[in-house]
Image (tube, rainbow, N blue to C red):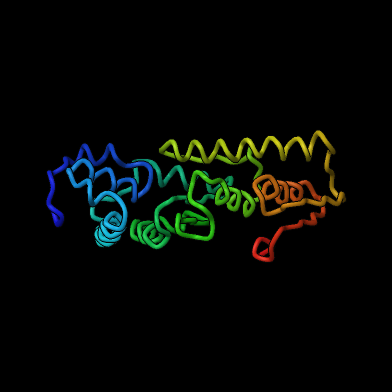
Length: 212
């Protein structure tokens, strides 16, 4: 390779996938005996080079799993469908367009967008809000522990939101609900959920940026 080091098998590389490009590059460099390149500024340079190669070869061996197109098309008849990934947005959009799949998805949220990367649940909250969906009506289809942790974080906050809207006070159409910290974890669930129940929602936030 460009940096030298011991060759690493494809099977070994596959086993390193799952926690983002930076972690993949760090693991691969360590496995190749390039410890000095797997940390600090050298790692950042290697990551930049990896992403350049990744962009050039996005579609070389990429294809949908058998039956996935039909499954997504069926899901669209009942719900909004979105892509939530830690991969860069531009690369994600390029893959979807290149495979002819972009029209199947209502939203695409990448790891370099306005929200923190998974497992922070903020991006999933955003997508749920756009769909006016409650946790019990949301399905996150993942392939790693990161996705599991993301879903778990939403469900914990979802229990709190459910209790406030259904147990503390059973919100009904015509009610007015004041949500403090509306941009926070629980607040971002409360707002669309209360609106879905027919309430008028007034939210507060700590900064002007959060209001937007």
